[in-house]
Length: 617
Image (cartoon, one colour):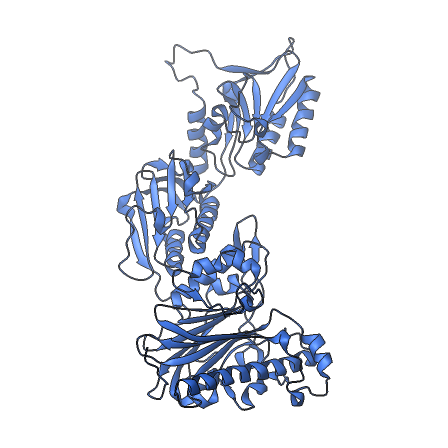
């Protein structure tokens, strides 16, 4: 029934058919598309193909004997002039075409007279292809004895597809007049909401709404505005709140967090634009609000004194890197670690603006003597300067090792063999000693990325030496700082985390190196309470960037448990183990974790004990 009504309404809008007094018929509009042996086609390259146009040209020439000329609407630099009798093919941006194609849906098409032109088109390549085939099969005929091919308005035809939702209006404006407007500066949760909403509306209503940035949005027609910065009076009284607000020709969609946007899209998908509705009318009476609380994968432990997070952000340069790292930054801002240690912080990641995204809350530590060093910048530490002071910092580049430093860890290989195999100037450890501004507690954090894991024993032997060197570097630096400032030896907690590229129980020996030497370390996961431990593998497959959709897709699942398969770890120095309590070890398993990198962020929450070392400011 909806299909029949759509056809009737479209025909009524496009064709004033003999609606004068029944006893006084008027002359029907006619249009000649072939005259003087010529036929002119104006086409839209976006909704046609070369094969489609060539097929139409050949069919007209064979049927009429006319010479067919074709002009692309994109070849004009200014006003497009439509001559009387033009054949318009596709969705050309001229009034004669738009008055009949603008209201069309994705599966609809129109063939017939519109103004001074004959339109054969739809809003997609597939629809226009159908329109061309309809014209060739049902309307294309030989010209009269004068060589003129004329069509009557009553021959016009409009085809409507099948859609689960009939008409949609927002604030009194039909949906087909709307565009989706996003802020000029893309925020992943806002951009993804726009893309997903566009896809959902296209599938259910047949209308393909354009997504435009605010600076390029037209004041004409309706707008679906997505983003807090575009809302007229945005306010939030609770975390993760979202708002859906309709007004005249306007639909505002904004949320306080990525979880708010996730919950808001569920509301739009399941309630507002649910399928099988003849019509949807949205007004201010339909405004909705809600919260996305409870969607986070790990609860915040507000009783904790310190949260430290580590994440390999994947330094690849393919796809939209800014969107990918932006998703990770949105996660970091939800979990608010006090110190953030990152790995694979490549030039591509920096060029994408990750540092700028973090800058409102986080400061990057630059080790003196390494300003501008690309190697040192691959494993950076970021910290909250509003809560912490940096007392000392350093950097160890694993490529500086000779592999003669720990002969007992070579397992029969020569230093030269390991050095040649493990050489990589991007791997190392950044470390810093921090003081809590409010209370004076002192602790140390190191962010590391060790040599790549490819299941060759020689590689793991290289990591044995690297781990021993990092272990001793951090331990010695903490001991020297403690002695200089009158702190009891061994009491400064050291949290050393990142991408170890070493699994816990696969027969290799490098992780065992952390438990040895003058400064032994232990895995913090062993000290976490039951139910608050890492249990799953921390790395996974890569997502895919969809050029067509403009978003990252295909998040990969995790296979394997932590003890056997994980390569991301957080270790602490054994000497300071009793200075704090491990409240929780966690891993973020939100979709953004799987789309933004091939590693999920891991973190530890600590509660300081009475024996924590302290320094007055």
